[in-house]
Length: 94
Image (cartoon, rainbow, N blue to C red):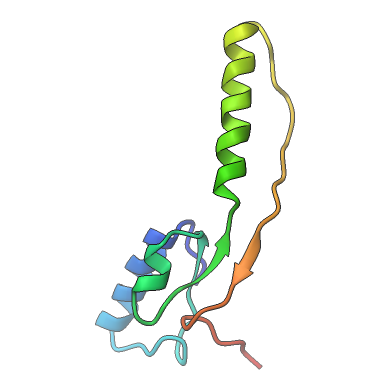
């Protein structure tokens, strides 16, 4: 199961455990964002980590551009490097 955020992945984890599923034996769970909560729950959650400092910098740059140039239309995709942090909630399937 892939959750849009690590917080949502914790909800998936709790739901799976409530229904008697074994994580990761019966179901693997992966979150996205790299929240600290992914490390402190058990089993810990595998997560796609984002460079939050860089996300913040890019956001501030865009806001500044829009303040200085209110009519500016920003039509640009920005893809930032992200990486998988493997933890206890994921087990490869054969």
